[in-house]
Length: 311
View 1 (cartoon, rainbow, N blue to C red):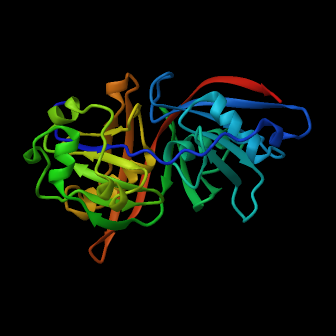
View 2 (view 1 turned 90 degrees about the vertical axis):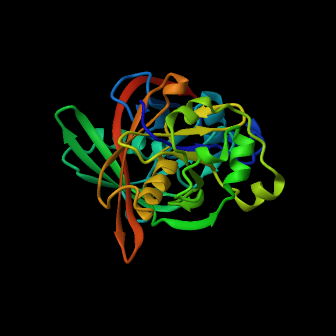
């Protein structure tokens, strides 16, 4: 991959405390789960996700503790719909419930599609609101694509601070496009780099000045480029995400808003090769009245394994 990339480095969210096991009281039963890999067609690549397809009756505390036990970035729990959608979906990280996340939405829709033959669209009721997911059965597998919330463009960041903290020269940031906060359900600071060589040198463990963190608090910092092949990274203090569906939607809006990519052009964004889990995320966005709109993020999903939690 010898193209330009946009890079985002991850700022960690505050961690919630562990929930007491005593709060999990409920009837004793087993709960099956399916583990899938999202944004790939090859098991053990992409971003892993555990999905509990029948989570009615589970307490919040039990869901949280299962997510902590499985130790994935997210775990999802499917429950009966409450507001006219196809299902209610709860998304838990290892430490808290999330209002929205990208690869959990697509991985969950893939599992739901297995028991809904003939469906071409699903509506998932998430904390952030209803998320629509299109299902496209292709010769090489089921392609799932979500429509994210309308993009909101926020503050622009000083590239000098980013360069100093991340450990590269300020002229390695593409100065045609200011790093900017964007949200399509979750906030990310999009950082445009000129070269993939800069992307390859990034290290974990950035510590930004407090004033900067306050001004640009959100889910993280995501870096990209606008060349023929786009690559990204999402890095935190101690770990790197192999594929970030929520962040790449923000990047898609950024690319179209700044004229780096054409409206409705589907772009393949590559992520995860630096952690041995190569992923391909397909993004596109429209534009209306000079503003990016209708952000869609898609990809393939593959089943990896199954198991049962013995409650």
